[in-house]
Image 1 (cartoon, rainbow, N blue to C red):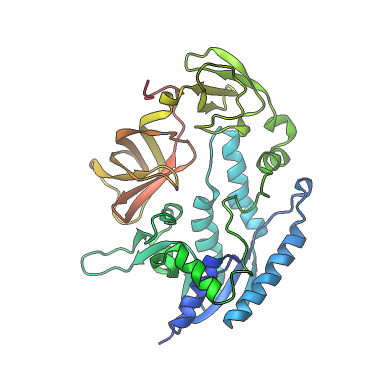
Image 2 (cartoon, rainbow, N blue to C red):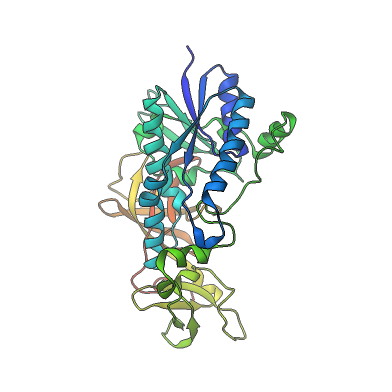
Length: 370
Protein backbone atom coordinates (compact mmCIF):
# COMPACT_ATOMS: atom_id res chain seq x y z
CA UNK A 1 0.00 0.00 0.00
CA UNK A 2 1.52 3.37 -1.01
CA UNK A 3 2.60 5.67 1.82
CA UNK A 4 1.77 9.38 1.63
CA UNK A 5 5.05 11.23 2.17
CA UNK A 6 5.92 14.92 2.26
CA UNK A 7 9.42 15.95 1.24
CA UNK A 8 10.91 19.07 2.81
CA UNK A 9 12.22 20.55 -0.43
CA UNK A 10 14.80 23.29 -0.16
CA UNK A 11 15.63 23.58 -3.83
CA UNK A 12 18.90 21.68 -3.48
CA UNK A 13 19.81 18.44 -5.18
CA UNK A 14 19.59 16.27 -2.04
CA UNK A 15 15.92 16.92 -1.27
CA UNK A 16 15.14 16.66 -4.98
CA UNK A 17 16.76 13.23 -5.10
CA UNK A 18 14.87 12.21 -1.95
CA UNK A 19 11.57 13.03 -3.66
CA UNK A 20 12.55 11.11 -6.78
CA UNK A 21 13.52 8.01 -4.78
CA UNK A 22 10.19 8.02 -2.96
CA UNK A 23 8.29 8.44 -6.22
CA UNK A 24 10.25 5.56 -7.74
CA UNK A 25 9.26 3.21 -4.91
CA UNK A 26 5.58 4.04 -5.47
CA UNK A 27 4.85 6.41 -2.59
CA UNK A 28 2.31 9.22 -2.85
CA UNK A 29 4.68 12.21 -2.66
CA UNK A 30 4.10 15.91 -2.10
CA UNK A 31 6.71 18.66 -1.69
CA UNK A 32 6.70 21.18 1.13
CA UNK A 33 8.88 24.26 1.05
CA UNK A 34 9.45 26.29 4.21
CA UNK A 35 9.34 30.04 3.71
CA UNK A 36 11.97 31.11 6.26
CA UNK A 37 14.16 33.95 5.02
CA UNK A 38 13.79 37.17 7.04
CA UNK A 39 13.96 40.57 5.44
CA UNK A 40 17.39 42.14 5.98
CA UNK A 41 17.21 45.60 4.36
CA UNK A 42 20.70 46.63 5.47
CA UNK A 43 22.38 43.61 3.87
CA UNK A 44 21.54 44.33 0.23
CA UNK A 45 19.30 41.26 0.29
CA UNK A 46 15.79 41.71 -1.09
CA UNK A 47 14.09 38.86 0.77
CA UNK A 48 10.87 39.03 -1.26
CA UNK A 49 12.74 38.83 -4.58
CA UNK A 50 14.85 35.97 -3.24
CA UNK A 51 11.73 34.14 -2.11
CA UNK A 52 9.97 34.55 -5.45
CA UNK A 53 13.03 33.37 -7.39
CA UNK A 54 13.50 30.28 -5.21
CA UNK A 55 9.83 29.36 -5.17
CA UNK A 56 9.49 29.71 -8.94
CA UNK A 57 12.49 27.41 -9.34
CA UNK A 58 10.94 24.92 -6.90
CA UNK A 59 7.68 24.86 -8.84
CA UNK A 60 9.63 23.97 -11.97
CA UNK A 61 11.55 21.22 -10.17
CA UNK A 62 8.41 19.76 -8.56
CA UNK A 63 6.62 19.79 -11.91
CA UNK A 64 9.54 17.89 -13.40
CA UNK A 65 8.97 15.16 -10.80
CA UNK A 66 5.19 15.40 -11.25
CA UNK A 67 4.52 16.15 -7.58
CA UNK A 68 2.49 19.00 -6.06
CA UNK A 69 4.32 21.76 -4.18
CA UNK A 70 3.00 23.53 -1.08
CA UNK A 71 4.60 26.67 0.35
CA UNK A 72 4.50 26.82 4.17
CA UNK A 73 4.83 30.27 5.75
CA UNK A 74 7.12 29.94 8.78
CA UNK A 75 9.08 33.20 8.84
CA UNK A 76 7.68 34.52 12.11
CA UNK A 77 8.14 31.22 13.95
CA UNK A 78 11.64 30.75 12.49
CA UNK A 79 12.64 34.18 13.74
CA UNK A 80 11.42 33.44 17.27
CA UNK A 81 12.60 29.84 17.57
CA UNK A 82 15.88 29.91 15.63
CA UNK A 83 17.20 33.37 14.75
CA UNK A 84 16.60 35.10 18.08
CA UNK A 85 18.23 32.30 20.15
CA UNK A 86 21.10 32.27 17.64
CA UNK A 87 21.75 35.98 18.16
CA UNK A 88 21.31 35.70 21.94
CA UNK A 89 23.91 32.92 22.06
CA UNK A 90 26.44 35.19 20.37
CA UNK A 91 25.73 37.82 23.01
CA UNK A 92 26.78 35.25 25.62
CA UNK A 93 30.08 34.52 23.90
CA UNK A 94 28.90 31.26 22.33
CA UNK A 95 29.15 29.94 18.76
CA UNK A 96 25.75 28.36 18.08
CA UNK A 97 24.69 26.01 15.31
CA UNK A 98 21.18 27.01 14.15
CA UNK A 99 20.54 23.75 12.23
CA UNK A 100 20.60 21.84 15.51
CA UNK A 101 17.67 23.96 16.72
CA UNK A 102 15.86 24.12 13.39
CA UNK A 103 15.56 20.37 12.81
CA UNK A 104 13.56 19.42 15.94
CA UNK A 105 11.65 22.70 16.34
CA UNK A 106 10.96 23.82 12.77
CA UNK A 107 11.48 21.02 10.25
CA UNK A 108 10.31 18.08 12.36
CA UNK A 109 8.21 20.36 14.53
CA UNK A 110 6.06 22.95 12.76
CA UNK A 111 6.59 21.60 9.24
CA UNK A 112 5.71 18.07 10.35
CA UNK A 113 2.55 19.46 11.96
CA UNK A 114 1.59 21.04 8.64
CA UNK A 115 2.35 17.82 6.79
CA UNK A 116 0.05 15.92 9.10
CA UNK A 117 -2.74 18.44 8.45
CA UNK A 118 -2.33 17.57 4.77
CA UNK A 119 -2.87 13.89 5.55
CA UNK A 120 0.78 12.89 5.27
CA UNK A 121 2.16 9.80 7.02
CA UNK A 122 5.85 10.71 6.98
CA UNK A 123 8.17 13.67 6.43
CA UNK A 124 11.30 13.07 4.35
CA UNK A 125 14.37 15.28 4.08
CA UNK A 126 17.59 15.24 2.08
CA UNK A 127 19.79 14.57 5.11
CA UNK A 128 22.57 12.04 4.70
CA UNK A 129 21.56 9.86 7.64
CA UNK A 130 19.95 6.46 8.09
CA UNK A 131 17.06 5.30 10.23
CA UNK A 132 16.32 1.87 11.65
CA UNK A 133 12.83 0.96 12.91
CA UNK A 134 12.33 -0.78 16.26
CA UNK A 135 12.56 -4.57 16.35
CA UNK A 136 12.54 -7.33 18.96
CA UNK A 137 16.04 -6.47 20.14
CA UNK A 138 15.80 -2.67 19.89
CA UNK A 139 12.62 -0.99 21.12
CA UNK A 140 13.60 2.45 19.84
CA UNK A 141 14.01 4.08 16.45
CA UNK A 142 17.76 4.26 15.79
CA UNK A 143 19.45 7.10 13.95
CA UNK A 144 22.66 6.14 12.18
CA UNK A 145 25.40 7.94 10.29
CA UNK A 146 24.96 8.27 6.53
CA UNK A 147 26.72 5.83 4.25
CA UNK A 148 28.91 8.61 2.82
CA UNK A 149 31.31 9.52 5.67
CA UNK A 150 32.27 12.80 4.01
CA UNK A 151 28.64 13.92 3.84
CA UNK A 152 27.13 12.32 6.97
CA UNK A 153 24.64 14.75 8.61
CA UNK A 154 23.52 12.72 11.62
CA UNK A 155 25.25 15.34 13.79
CA UNK A 156 22.48 17.83 13.03
CA UNK A 157 19.67 15.41 13.93
CA UNK A 158 20.56 14.25 17.44
CA UNK A 159 17.87 16.52 18.95
CA UNK A 160 14.93 14.65 17.39
CA UNK A 161 12.53 12.75 19.61
CA UNK A 162 11.36 9.19 19.15
CA UNK A 163 7.99 10.49 17.92
CA UNK A 164 9.73 12.65 15.33
CA UNK A 165 11.95 9.79 14.18
CA UNK A 166 8.86 7.61 13.83
CA UNK A 167 7.54 10.08 11.25
CA UNK A 168 10.90 10.71 9.54
CA UNK A 169 12.46 9.37 6.35
CA UNK A 170 15.98 9.96 5.00
CA UNK A 171 15.92 8.51 1.47
CA UNK A 172 19.46 9.58 0.48
CA UNK A 173 21.08 8.19 3.61
CA UNK A 174 22.37 5.16 1.74
CA UNK A 175 23.69 7.24 -1.17
CA UNK A 176 27.03 8.93 -1.69
CA UNK A 177 27.02 12.58 -2.68
CA UNK A 178 28.67 11.85 -6.02
CA UNK A 179 25.87 9.38 -6.82
CA UNK A 180 23.25 12.05 -6.14
CA UNK A 181 25.11 14.57 -8.30
CA UNK A 182 25.43 12.02 -11.10
CA UNK A 183 21.68 11.36 -10.96
CA UNK A 184 20.98 15.10 -11.25
CA UNK A 185 23.25 15.37 -14.29
CA UNK A 186 21.75 12.32 -16.00
CA UNK A 187 18.18 13.54 -15.46
CA UNK A 188 18.66 17.15 -16.51
CA UNK A 189 18.41 18.72 -13.04
CA UNK A 190 22.04 19.74 -12.55
CA UNK A 191 21.59 23.19 -14.11
CA UNK A 192 18.34 23.82 -12.22
CA UNK A 193 19.61 23.47 -8.67
CA UNK A 194 21.95 25.95 -6.93
CA UNK A 195 25.44 25.01 -5.91
CA UNK A 196 25.56 23.65 -2.37
CA UNK A 197 26.27 26.36 0.19
CA UNK A 198 28.03 25.96 3.53
CA UNK A 199 26.63 29.28 4.75
CA UNK A 200 23.88 29.72 7.34
CA UNK A 201 20.65 29.82 5.35
CA UNK A 202 19.30 33.07 6.83
CA UNK A 203 22.51 35.11 6.49
CA UNK A 204 23.58 36.36 3.05
CA UNK A 205 27.00 35.00 2.06
CA UNK A 206 29.77 37.28 3.28
CA UNK A 207 27.51 39.32 5.57
CA UNK A 208 27.83 37.43 8.84
CA UNK A 209 29.01 40.37 10.94
CA UNK A 210 26.59 42.77 9.28
CA UNK A 211 23.70 40.47 10.15
CA UNK A 212 24.67 40.41 13.84
CA UNK A 213 25.14 44.19 13.81
CA UNK A 214 21.69 44.62 12.30
CA UNK A 215 20.17 42.43 15.00
CA UNK A 216 22.22 43.60 17.97
CA UNK A 217 22.81 47.19 17.00
CA UNK A 218 26.21 48.65 16.13
CA UNK A 219 26.79 49.63 19.76
CA UNK A 220 26.90 46.01 20.92
CA UNK A 221 28.40 44.16 17.98
CA UNK A 222 31.30 46.62 17.74
CA UNK A 223 31.80 47.10 21.49
CA UNK A 224 35.54 47.14 21.96
CA UNK A 225 37.29 45.22 24.70
CA UNK A 226 40.58 43.68 25.72
CA UNK A 227 42.38 40.78 24.09
CA UNK A 228 44.19 38.99 26.91
CA UNK A 229 46.40 35.95 27.29
CA UNK A 230 45.69 33.06 29.67
CA UNK A 231 47.33 34.97 32.53
CA UNK A 232 45.09 37.98 31.94
CA UNK A 233 47.79 40.19 30.42
CA UNK A 234 46.31 42.69 27.96
CA UNK A 235 47.80 42.16 24.49
CA UNK A 236 45.50 44.27 22.36
CA UNK A 237 41.95 45.39 21.65
CA UNK A 238 39.10 43.69 19.85
CA UNK A 239 36.18 45.20 17.92
CA UNK A 240 33.39 43.08 19.45
CA UNK A 241 33.36 39.47 20.68
CA UNK A 242 30.74 38.48 18.09
CA UNK A 243 33.54 38.77 15.50
CA UNK A 244 35.51 35.89 17.02
CA UNK A 245 35.21 32.17 17.66
CA UNK A 246 37.33 29.56 19.40
CA UNK A 247 40.21 28.40 17.23
CA UNK A 248 40.35 31.61 15.18
CA UNK A 249 43.81 32.81 14.19
CA UNK A 250 43.24 35.52 11.59
CA UNK A 251 42.13 39.04 12.38
CA UNK A 252 43.59 39.30 15.89
CA UNK A 253 46.12 42.00 15.00
CA UNK A 254 48.69 40.78 17.52
CA UNK A 255 52.38 40.98 16.68
CA UNK A 256 54.18 37.90 17.97
CA UNK A 257 56.95 35.47 17.08
CA UNK A 258 54.40 32.63 17.22
CA UNK A 259 50.72 32.84 16.26
CA UNK A 260 47.97 33.41 18.79
CA UNK A 261 44.58 31.67 18.63
CA UNK A 262 41.28 32.47 20.30
CA UNK A 263 40.83 29.98 23.15
CA UNK A 264 37.79 31.53 24.89
CA UNK A 265 35.27 34.35 24.73
CA UNK A 266 34.25 35.95 28.03
CA UNK A 267 31.03 37.89 27.50
CA UNK A 268 30.84 38.97 31.15
CA UNK A 269 34.12 40.91 30.95
CA UNK A 270 33.94 41.49 27.18
CA UNK A 271 37.33 39.85 26.74
CA UNK A 272 38.77 37.70 23.97
CA UNK A 273 41.20 35.21 25.53
CA UNK A 274 44.07 34.01 23.34
CA UNK A 275 46.78 31.40 23.64
CA UNK A 276 49.15 29.32 21.58
CA UNK A 277 48.17 26.37 19.40
CA UNK A 278 48.73 23.92 22.26
CA UNK A 279 46.23 25.82 24.42
CA UNK A 280 43.41 24.96 22.00
CA UNK A 281 43.43 21.32 23.13
CA UNK A 282 41.09 20.20 25.90
CA UNK A 283 40.49 16.80 27.37
CA UNK A 284 37.13 17.51 28.99
CA UNK A 285 33.89 19.31 28.25
CA UNK A 286 30.45 19.52 29.76
CA UNK A 287 27.39 18.98 27.56
CA UNK A 288 24.01 20.27 28.73
CA UNK A 289 20.44 19.95 27.40
CA UNK A 290 21.30 16.36 26.47
CA UNK A 291 18.83 14.42 24.34
CA UNK A 292 19.17 10.62 24.38
CA UNK A 293 18.05 8.82 21.24
CA UNK A 294 19.13 5.19 21.17
CA UNK A 295 19.33 4.56 24.93
CA UNK A 296 17.84 5.65 28.23
CA UNK A 297 19.87 8.28 30.13
CA UNK A 298 22.80 6.34 31.60
CA UNK A 299 23.30 6.22 35.35
CA UNK A 300 26.91 5.01 35.09
CA UNK A 301 29.93 6.11 33.02
CA UNK A 302 29.57 5.19 29.36
CA UNK A 303 32.23 4.58 26.70
CA UNK A 304 31.48 5.99 23.23
CA UNK A 305 32.83 8.27 20.50
CA UNK A 306 32.09 11.99 20.59
CA UNK A 307 31.92 14.48 17.72
CA UNK A 308 32.31 18.15 18.71
CA UNK A 309 31.47 19.70 15.31
CA UNK A 310 30.10 18.39 12.06
CA UNK A 311 33.46 17.82 10.33
CA UNK A 312 35.15 16.45 13.46
CA UNK A 313 36.15 12.80 13.47
CA UNK A 314 34.34 11.21 16.45
CA UNK A 315 36.91 10.64 19.20
CA UNK A 316 36.89 7.96 21.94
CA UNK A 317 35.68 9.28 25.27
CA UNK A 318 33.93 8.42 28.53
CA UNK A 319 30.66 10.09 29.48
CA UNK A 320 29.83 10.61 33.15
CA UNK A 321 26.33 11.78 34.15
CA UNK A 322 26.49 15.08 36.08
CA UNK A 323 22.83 15.75 36.70
CA UNK A 324 19.59 16.12 34.83
CA UNK A 325 20.33 16.22 31.07
CA UNK A 326 24.02 16.98 31.63
CA UNK A 327 27.17 14.89 31.16
CA UNK A 328 30.90 15.30 31.57
CA UNK A 329 32.86 14.15 28.52
CA UNK A 330 36.47 13.09 29.03
CA UNK A 331 38.35 12.27 25.84
CA UNK A 332 41.06 9.65 25.68
CA UNK A 333 43.16 12.23 23.83
CA UNK A 334 42.75 16.04 24.02
CA UNK A 335 40.68 17.55 21.21
CA UNK A 336 41.30 20.82 19.37
CA UNK A 337 39.01 23.86 19.56
CA UNK A 338 36.21 22.62 21.80
CA UNK A 339 33.72 25.41 21.14
CA UNK A 340 30.96 26.40 23.59
CA UNK A 341 27.59 26.64 21.85
CA UNK A 342 28.35 23.84 19.39
CA UNK A 343 26.96 20.34 19.89
CA UNK A 344 28.73 17.29 21.27
CA UNK A 345 27.11 14.24 19.69
CA UNK A 346 27.66 10.75 21.09
CA UNK A 347 28.11 7.68 18.87
CA UNK A 348 28.45 3.94 19.20
CA UNK A 349 30.18 3.36 15.85
CA UNK A 350 27.47 4.48 13.36
CA UNK A 351 24.68 4.67 15.93
CA UNK A 352 23.74 8.07 17.38
CA UNK A 353 23.29 7.64 21.13
CA UNK A 354 22.40 11.27 21.80
CA UNK A 355 23.99 14.67 22.19
CA UNK A 356 23.99 18.02 23.95
CA UNK A 357 25.28 21.60 23.82
CA UNK A 358 28.85 22.31 24.88
CA UNK A 359 28.80 24.73 27.80
CA UNK A 360 31.21 27.58 28.45
CA UNK A 361 33.90 26.76 31.00
CA UNK A 362 33.86 29.03 34.06
CA UNK A 363 37.58 29.73 33.66
CA UNK A 364 39.06 30.27 30.22
CA UNK A 365 42.24 28.32 30.81
CA UNK A 366 40.79 25.30 32.61
CA UNK A 367 41.86 21.88 31.43
CA UNK A 368 43.92 23.20 28.55
CA UNK A 369 47.02 21.36 27.47
CA UNK A 370 50.23 23.38 27.73
